[in-house]
Image (tube, rainbow, N blue to C red):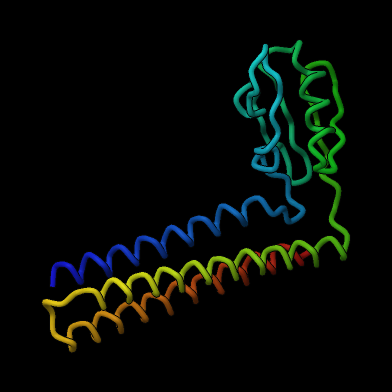
Length: 184
């Protein structure tokens, strides 16, 4: 019985981490609002070592359409400016001598649809991962010899309930993100 509970808990933990991964993936899909996480993938050459932009500056969002990057070392402004331009994010920073100001352009309808498709793809990948966790758990249950078939069936039903619960969480998260993306 303890072994069955361990398998069920392990499956639940794996499914939960898939939801966390989906939330992280959705945070990178911009929906027209400025977010410091939009610059997470930008790195600069900071005195000879490749450093993420956030570890060499303060990144803030004073309003919904603006990101400010205030470097700790003002001599790095040009390097940061070039790194943001080279990152292919579609941003053009304005350098005022103190900080970089990035105005986030509004999304076109076509771009919104593309982002919604990307979000749908991420949610489908999360569902696949959840079903894989279910399959692994069920395979582990079948390897147990010392337990009755009824207990195995009950455990499989519990795992299926978990799968349904987490799949519906993915659908709900996707619905919220889709509305966020498509809202102008």
